[in-house]
Image 1: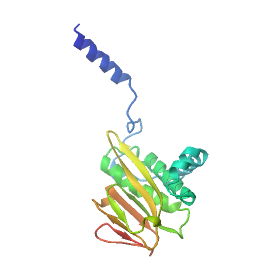
Image 2: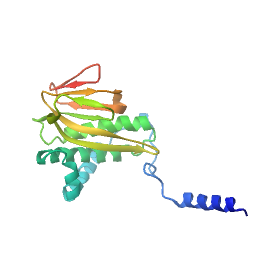
Image 3: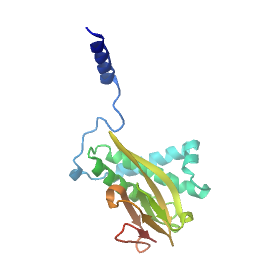
Image 4: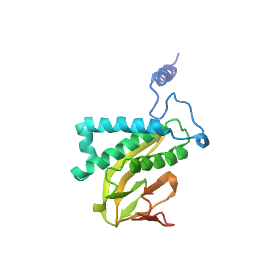
Length: 195
């Protein structure tokens, strides 16, 4: 047996014994058209992630993006992102997983908004953007999604009244999803949000 064959067979053995990369799991693949969120599981996962963020002081510190008042927003975004990842892990279509992720995270953010009088909108976006008043966004947190081998991250945050979000890239639910309280904001045809 030649050295190149021995090296190849050794590497093949390592690959077979290596754990699957993140995003590959034993859960059954879900056809994107059949995907329906399990809101009970989402709520359970949200509560679990929220407990984790409250028990882990270093995580709470990382979630505090500007001040102590921002911690509650950061925790809600972190928990919504964790719950969303658990919901979509069976989706193997990258674009469908991203679409569902942005929708689930923003819904979880609005459902668990720590201060609805202050924060009237939830935004997740993974391109460049501008904010009219950066002081009027809350809990800015990067949420990562991966469907092996692809991965990306989204900036997710709450936005208050008398503010505007301008998207500088592609819109669509793959890259951007926003939710807001009824009558508090308007979304224009350029994928910009005004509250």
